[in-house]
Amino acid sequence: MTELLDLLRCPACGGTLARRDGSLVCEARHAYDLARAGYVNLLPPGKMKNARAGDEAVMVRARTAFLSLGRYDPIDEALADALCRLLPDGEAVVVDMGAGEGWHTCRTAELLFEKRAAPVLALGFDASKYAAERGCALARARGHFSRCALGSPREGDVTVACLPGNIFHLPVADACASAALSLFAPVPWAEAARVLAPGGILAVVSAGRDHLIELRRELYDEVRTTEYLPAPPEDSPLKLLERVPLAFSFAAESREELENLFVMTPFYHKTGEDGRRRLAQRDGMRLTASVNLSLFVLRGVTCSSAS
Image (cartoon, rainbow, N blue to C red; front, top):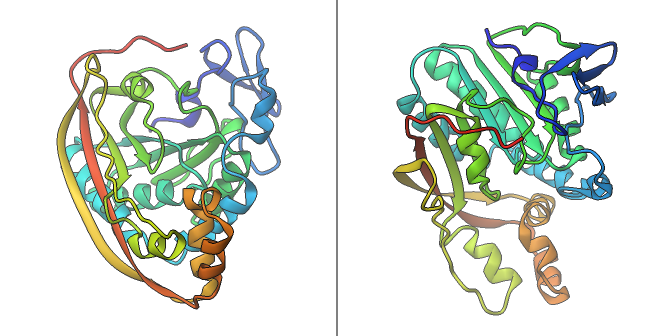
């Protein structure tokens, strides 16, 4: 089976990484220490803003609390079903670009194994170190955690590692992944093409026109409905295979759950006091989830390294 250390690359120079005591070190002697939570921070070095990159801790906690209730599970099911149809038999290596706290990373990996009965290795990258810590804790709780910096061999058929990393400069090898994921996140088209093996699948989940429409009506006096249908640049080797619309309803059954949903969305930074006040008066709400699953294939070419 593929090991985590075989896939990781130095974010500074793109070199291979090797274990040295409690660190990963490349041939150019760039070193990355193992955090207590078990991850290695592979954000590009020398960036002062790295300390504040990605979602803040309150948003990560809210997302963890909300997603653990299973309200968005149909999205993971649809994603795993599509990948199961499109991926070849055998081990799957999945790179999640913008993994957040790792919930979708873990669930998709689990569902792929259940449906295909073949090992799954999933790497989730996010700019937030808080998200990586939550992702490590989630993977550990679900029995999939690997202390990747120690170079320990994989245990079990599902392995998940969540790491701080720049999704537009992923610290992973060229053409190493059978699938790349982007859920409710910016799509790094060039990096997706680079890390996918020829014939690999990029799966993008984006909000549909009526996604959380009831929540938006509560927050804003005027609601504008838009729909984002992702498309790669004209010169990209990624080609659209299909779009799968998915819509379902769910209930936020308490004020706390509704607040967590609000905090984990972009609405959290875009809502005024009036909207927040109206939401705080609600003890729950029936909501619509509306998303598009866009599936792209990497045509039979090998992309050069972005390092």
